[in-house]
Image (cartoon, rainbow, N blue to C red; front, side, top):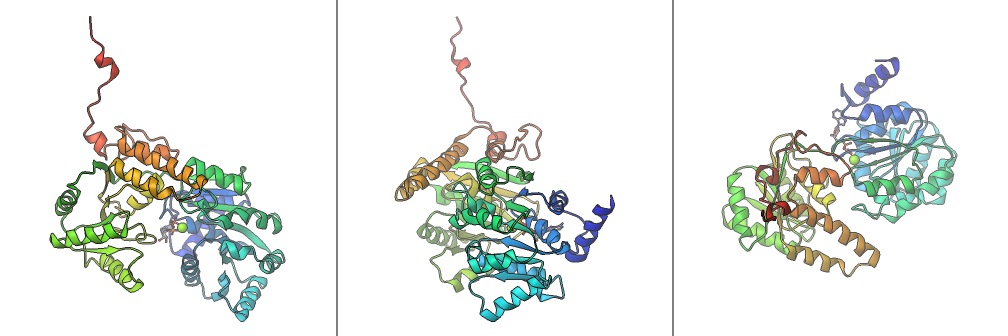
Length: 421
Ligand code: ADP
Ligand code: MG
């Protein structure tokens, strides 16, 4: 290790208490410290926050962190403050602050105390803030959840499109984009919109070798099939995703009637019930949560053993995120999706009310899900290919962990049909 490496290891220990970097963190941090534009693609849980937090803490000036969710920003600010004796080390700047609070934030930034300033993209468009930020030293701008800039991502936010213009007004500051969305299309969009084709790009593997992928044809017996599956995984934690709230309710009920401890979770339930059901799942008072996609953001239960999709997801991106909640501890994680073409048509019908451009993207993403469901090749290879990653279907880690590899479908190849004369 050279002196620089020793230095950042020391700072890692000092601030975060970790003795080692995770994955590509060290390379990313070195790139940021070198004042270069940097692009980080790592799966959820990969440790992206530390990639910008550590360099922010050890450099002069304030790092601006753009993040789409106020709740996420607050969590991060609290976490950073707990690492330091100074509350002013991290701040959130948003419209909910009082005049006095804003004055305090500005004071802490001006005095050099604040190392991380979290802002929502819409706050950054406020002229008052931009003028102020022009007058103080900025170490870099980190754009978390950078896929929000792309219509091909799962969470497009138009305000993200203005970011580059605003950052330009701040002078020559390096930009760090971070995302867990690995599709080449989204990555291209991010680099283009942030005008940083020169960025050092760091991409971690998206392979989750301990997850087993399986697709079953959806028949009218789906409910008894799910019950049988759960009974084979007795006492284990699992999530069942359904498209509609109504389905969530009815499946939860069917499971309960069949002696499986399950609770429903969807945005139609009041906040108290949702919190209660989530806690019951986390505390293992129930084994199964039946949910719409409203469930899962920020849920960190390490021993979820199965994720079942009662209905196919609207993109492989979402499928990867949702199944990614299984086997976080590295143990077994069974990802089972039920597929019927009727569901595809249903999703297409949902989309038909949307603007044409959005529809086209929606259809294209859905076609990839169809292809995944219908493929007879390694599902892991298919998924990773979708994320721009070449997977060795023979020898790669987890290569035999899917239904297609374990039970190859019999394929009639054209050459077998040639009648020999
Ligand atoms: P992401 O934003 O990529 O989803 P986070 O930044 O939220 O991931 O980090 C996920 C978890 O990994 C956090 O609990 C964090 O404390 C932990 N973590 C990050 N870096 C390290 C490290 N070097 N060693 C151990 N744990 C780490
Ligand atoms: Mg993150």
